[in-house]
Length: 185
Image 1: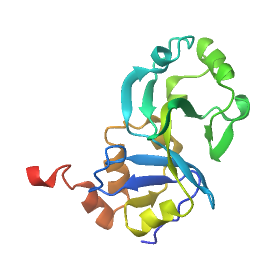
Image 2 (image 1 turned 90 degrees about the horizontal axis):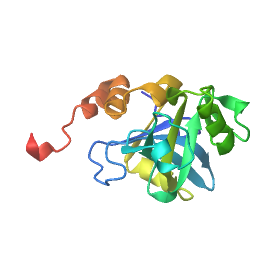
Image 3 (image 1 turned 60 degrees about the vertical axis):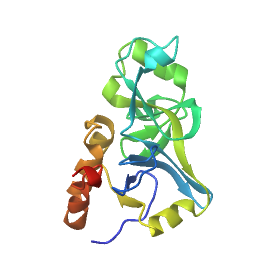
Image 4 (image 1 turned 120 degrees about the vertical axis):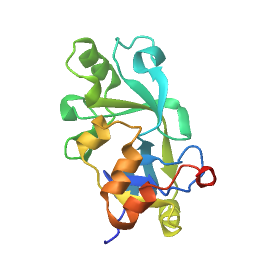
């Protein structure tokens, strides 16, 4: 199987033995990748806080926050499927966008025009400097994968890493079955 190159809209799956708490068994959506570095959001690290609990004037909206990564974890980011209906959105891949006018998003949530499965909120992001991600890929810390918008936005996050890795077949399916802590096996 040919290895995929990282690019905007692709996913990074951590190798099963990565012990960094931020990235252990994580799935990261790349939203930026160029000669200056890379940026993305961890999709499968929910925290026990909803958007309306974190943002005072956000309407009641049943959407958990996710820990997007260790960088700028004092800032809020979001991805969505609403396209250019939210001004300033950045196209990631067909049917998936990043950011945009937050006040407009709040208005859509208030009027019921956007549903929780159409948006995901993150505290912080994951970032790499120039060539840092390529070096980590060379050390096999990450596997690059494609992901469908439905997987990114709606799949249960508790099994996302395992489901994506096993779906790649062959040696990846074997890796997906490694125990979280091999010494406890």
